[in-house]
Image (cartoon, rainbow, N blue to C red; front, side):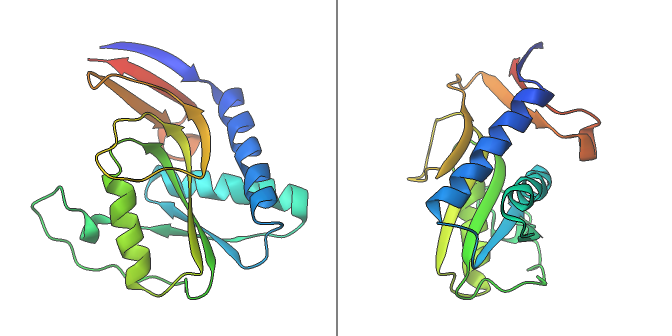
Length: 172
């Protein structure tokens, strides 16, 4: 498999910093915002966005992880509904994921969030948007658009679980 680094550690940091500023600007501050990262890599990216926002605004946003397995429509195995330790009721939720591709993961995450309450608003932040949607879903905040073919794979690596920070384009 042929691999190419699309974003290195510095590129990821710059993209997440810019996205954090866009979140602050779009929401006119951080009041009533929470970050919900889609497990696994989305939760680590959400924590990094929270770090950047805290540096700028002096406020630490509540950040949570959401396991979406119970709401997936592309797996045969059924998973129990997870319990969550946060409320989305009347909050502006920034949903964070690593790669936006067909939209199925985000659809499952939206269903999961709505299962636990009515958010005031849900916005989507992704580090990489690679196109090829099957569902009418678009990100509000994008670190990098990487047009790719269906024969390619985009893989985000984060130090917290992969020991390195980078975005790889893999040709099969």
